[in-house]
Length: 124
Image 1 (cartoon, one colour):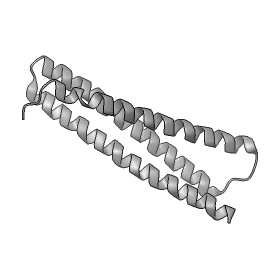
Image 2 (cartoon, rainbow, N blue to C red; image 1 turned 180 degrees about the vertical axis):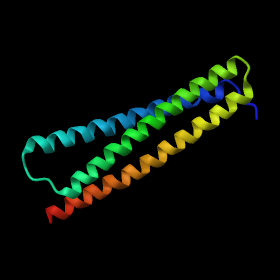
Image 3 (cartoon, rainbow, N blue to C red; image 1 turned 45 degrees about the vertical axis):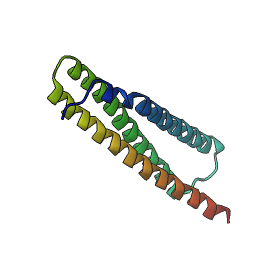
Image 4 (cartoon, rainbow, N blue to C red; image 1 turned 120 degrees about the horizontal axis):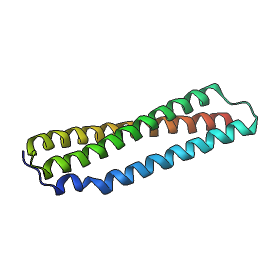
């Protein structure tokens, strides 16, 4: 399969926005954890477990997104210097990492909803 130099370039804005969304999720989670620790109130053990799990998943989401972005750049370089077959394979790896990152995002969203349900259970 032959891909042009512009094909991986099309992913640049998408991956950049995705990384920005992941960073925002991380910052809001970090703020929540800081607020919980400064409130000096007892925290449900399920919530702590949930928060640790979400932090781990967000880290893996960000790592996969950054690696996907780096492989897109490497793909463009390889295509530029004429290594089309290698560039196509690296681009495929980049797409797989992006897919992995998106799957992790869905998992993190589901865990986040579970956390809200735990909180709602405590309120009722």
